[in-house]
Image (cartoon, rainbow, N blue to C red; front, side):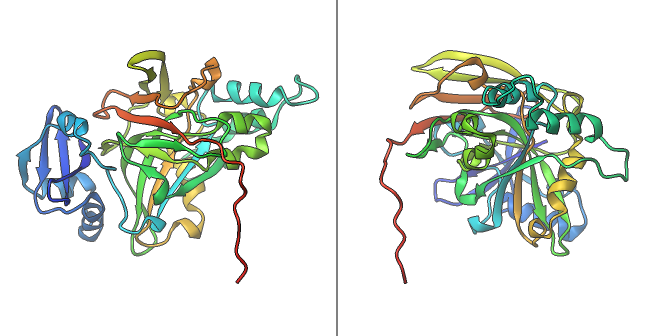
Length: 331
């Protein structure tokens, strides 16, 4: 089952449910956020709550996407209460590119980098037994809801950026209940857009490189994931595919379990504030940057995977460089 949000002609939102090839409006639900709160209040799963509502008019999501009427599959009315975060070095094979980037800056390239140490820690203790806590992963912050870009929208690289490149990932979508319990609504495709050139300068710049917009959706997969997911990431330039590669996800291809990654995010009281939304991106091992692709203004990113509905498509917009410093006024 897949859920999404569409923009109606009067400016309101509707929630759409897709089962197989059939997509229909969910009657009596104003947003995915409201649907999730309703499910929590009723003690139901999100799927059970959906089944308690009637289905209305059928819709063509592909046509709506072409009209720019697919929005984020979930949002918060106050963007400050929506958090975009992620974890890195979580997928088998993800350390090779990172290690190459950072080892090239090390005095001794043969020495194990901090990235490789972090990756090895995950391999050794990222999949703990039930009831146990595994090692904490690399974690990063991307921004609040103001950094969330709708499917079909532009990923804008700021004027101070050194680069702008895609990262095809899965994201967990969460809402926090009134008693501070986090609930997972489902999973979505995500483009964890980052600045890899900046990160390569020094791995301590990773925090800066992640403060960029990100997109997710267009649909949320409700329920559990298969152990292995094989998706496709591609870049189009002037209508032609200039790079294409499969990306792997799912726990069979990861050094951490989702439960371990979730624990190390929601163990912080900061992230258990009632009503908050969380979009937590789980990492990738596939980057066009690793294949020496330099993305350009106007490039189109496309991320897809079987079972996740429509592809996540976004255009790259590069902001012209501006050397002027930000001025702060004294009160």
